[in-house]
Amino acid sequence: MNQPAERPTYTDVVAAATRIAPHVHRTPAFTSATIDRMVDARVVFKAENLQKVGAFKARGATNAVFALSDQDAARGVVTHSSGNHGQ
Image 1 (cartoon, helix red, strand yellow):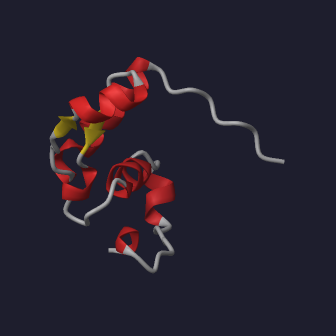
Image 2 (cartoon, rainbow, N blue to C red; image 1 turned 60 degrees about the horizontal axis):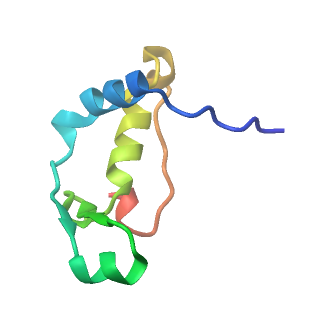
């Protein structure tokens, strides 16, 4: 049975950001006063659709690949996608 994933630490997030920085675009964040009023909260939209492949999946997939050990990476990586993740 699969164990639940541990919550990433701040150090984990910084390490992931450092690993993927050369491979992904820095994308803008947007706000909307109208939506903030509708939900009575501040909402920030991160425009990950502006990534090279047009989706947020680039960050997670890139981090997963570059976090592999040399031994695991040497075995290769396969992904299944009929959309932009497979690009």
